Structure formats: C-alpha cells, structure tokens
Length: 128
Image 1 (cartoon, one colour):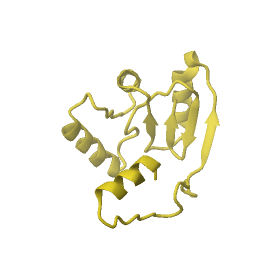
Image 2 (spheres, helix red, strand yellow; image 1 turned 90 degrees about the horizontal axis):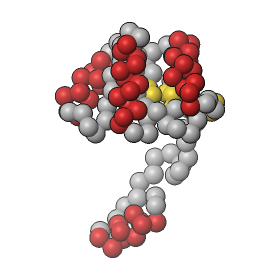
Image 3 (cartoon, helix red, strand yellow; image 1 turned 90 degrees about the vertical axis):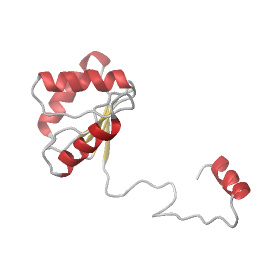
C-alpha cells in the first residue's frame, strides 16, 4: 500500500486494519506476461495477427479514449465483434451490456486500448 494512503488511514481511522490477499505487491502466479516491441505504424496489423492466433475472449487496453474509439471502430470495420469502455461513454448501459456478453463468452473484445510504448500479451490480454 502506498505510504500516503497508509498515513491517511492512520490519521483518519481508529485502529485501521490492513488486509492483504496473497503477497503484498506480488503479481498473480497464474498470469504469463510476454512483451513484444512493435513499431507504431505496424501495431494495428500486428494486433490483428495476434487476435487471429488467440481464441476469445480477449482484452485490449489503451492509454486514452481516442485510441479506444479508433481501435473499436477498426475492429468493427473488419467485422470483429467488439465492445469498448471508457469514461466518455454511457458507462452503466454500455459497460453492463459488454460485461454480460463477455461473461457469456460471446464477445471477442471487452475493452479496446492502445498504449504507445510497446505491446504486452497478458494471458488473453493485449496492451499496445
């Protein structure tokens, strides 16, 4: 837990209790992470290649809302069933619909996202 949060808890609460699930600060041991660096201009093509090799469901994380919308639109154009979630959308309606479809296993993409610094595969999650 960050020091500022610990200090705030001590000052604002009476006898605060800290609950750690697993080891504090440790990653889940069931998750395999791979990092692949891709040039900016090749990211979309590489994303599609990766998605063709990965069975649904898949999560894609982005750095900003514009990238979410751009990737979501592109995936729909190439006829990939996709959903997008970010703070600029009607969260309750869109998010609940996407989560419901995601849980049923019918949706290939839950959140479309693009990060400028490389590309990481996290189980069936891609981060650009």
